Length: 128
Image 1 (cartoon, helix red, strand yellow):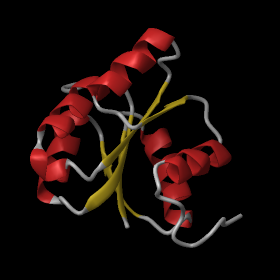
Image 2: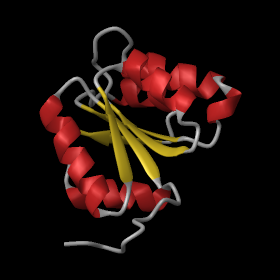
Image 3: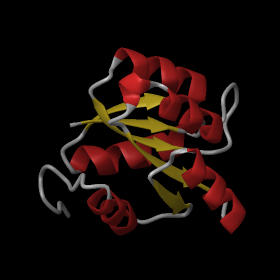
């Protein structure tokens, strides 16, 4: 199963990529929303995108809106993973089309729990 990690922080991309890789996902990375949208449009078999909110060029909310508006990407599950902790921001993301919302800092168990809620449990079971 393919996943895309979208964050301008290389460290966060590495951490999330490792978590998803350990769970059996084939992981790609994008540094900002515009790069992510191009990737998703050319890899329409991507099942999951983990998206930061605050990024250059195209922020996470704009990316969620763009993905939600593209009928070719209707099956991509969108999870915001962000430092935005206000309930109003969470509501904006969900209204824009995000399927789940995780606040940084996060743990592996939180990410796994959200994947389960999305119907995307790990493909290799619960790896240590």
